[in-house]
Image 1 (cartoon, rainbow, N blue to C red):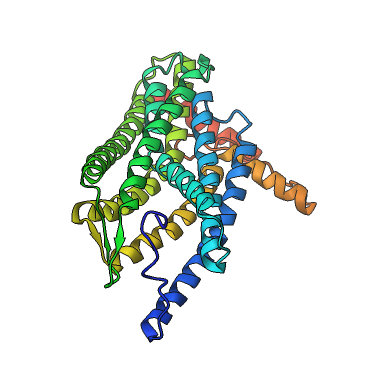
Image 2 (image 1 turned 90 degrees about the horizontal axis):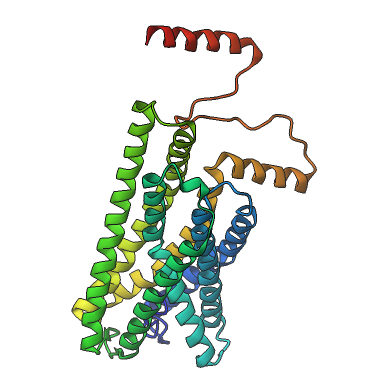
Length: 348
């Protein structure tokens, strides 16, 4: 959002103390942001690397792959703009303009990824029996492309609208482009509503799968396996959707406020600039959560660290059920566990 809301007022050179404080604030903010901007591609590219293992369904792997690539491109393009801003490199405006547009395009795609994730989990729930056999990536790729085209259109509208801005002498920003402003308000409202609805639907789907797994024992083994996979996967993705929804609320609040008021005071400008740091931190959190919350991905991460540092794997991974209960026991306890389960079946 740093490209959305101009920094001209915040970076104005002046002899008074307040301007000096603002300059220090920007330097510190951008420096911290740059650390996460460079960390995010490393984390996301590593996630792409281990995503080669078929730990998720094909459609979900495609969506998560697009998600990771978008996060990497978003933070790298943002890093270029931040470096140019901090060190006054005077990179041609045409290059900065292109990188800013790409950054904003990837950012809006990342923010709407919950729509694709919820749609994929809906299909996995409705088509539980056949879903594992659906290995074609065509439908998931088409869905990603359509969402990307929609967000590119919205990014273009915002670019035209924000280019109509005018920095006033009192360090506020006045926006023109009434028709574009109206379109942006409508688009933002629609997308925010869809994002909230998709997260709500996702939570309902997870609850439905839990109830179906616990109370319906008449399904075939393959169907019950798919239901259990839906529950495990939804637990991981839910963390991502919650963080993403918080980011969306932040972004939509600032941009919606500016679109309605057609002006931005210094408080709004500060909030807009802080958003870039928030987004960079989230870009590191997303792949970290996806890896650490999945037993097989977490195991592979551990193995890579062990190879890197020359350590040996003394103990195997702890395998848990969908209810987070251990499924592998010590030899001394296996007999008692068996007879406990047998007693439960007799009493049922």
